[in-house]
Image 1 (cartoon, rainbow, N blue to C red):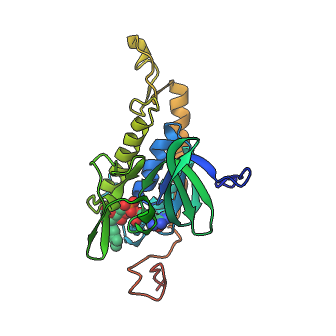
Image 2: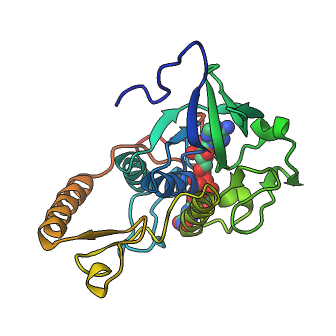
Image 3: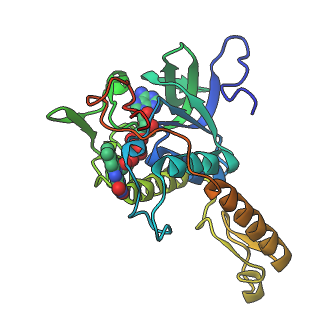
Length: 266
Ligand SMILES: Cc1cc2nc3c(=O)[nH]c(=O)nc-3n(C[C@H](O)[C@H](O)[C@H](O)COP(=O)(O)OP(=O)(O)OC[C@H]3O[C@@H](n4cnc5c(N)ncnc54)[C@H](O)[C@@H]3O)c2cc1C
């Protein structure tokens, strides 16, 4: 992959339509949706989805016998990039409001100093809110945790700034975080006035044989294309599940001498 932070021109920060802060379950799901809607999407991920601490993920739909959570996180990562999102490893340390071509937007600064302009930002960075201080968003403190308030569809009180996943105080399950990432992304897509219907792939003729145009965001595919996609999907899944995932199990970082909570193999 080419450098997703891109080449700067005249030292101007790169401009993205959507910046997602946090490449965990909610952020990567949101990225799948915004990228598939054709929005130029960049995800910054500062390290580890908390899901990587799970021992075996058994309540995510579609995996009857469960799935290794680190494999699941890797597959979600691959799904976001396959659908066109760019991913960068690194933390966002500051988000400011900015004028971009006379329109309101944001300037995000990463810990290595890289700056990115974005028209819209999704905060999916459980459990970090520090970088949001300059935008003046109200943040609800609850003990050691902090949550963003939103309108239940992901919009915060700052125009163009959205919240998703556990950070928006959704229930603490991966399926909920994924669904919330999708919902927030679809809210953003509608707000950006991107033509979008449902992001459905349907059999050839599903709309057109009823005299309807294929709605924006939808795709009709014929049987040859369907079979090709299914074959590719089967091959990819066989490869993902061919061997045990190599990454070490995590636990709470306070329990072991490893900043990411990796447990030594016994
Ligand atoms: C031990 C454990 C077991 C669990 N088991 C289950 C289970 O069995 N089933 C289930 O449904 N759920 C389980 N969960 C809950 C599930 O993991 C979470 O609800 C889900 O991961 C929340 O998704 P999220 O995207 O909001 O947060 P995360 O998945 O944690 O993603 C947040 C991401 O933001 C990144 N980030 C943070 N700050 C920044 C920043 N400043 N810049 C850039 N990136 C940043 C983080 O590195 C992280 O990758 C478990 C959680 C834990 C801790």
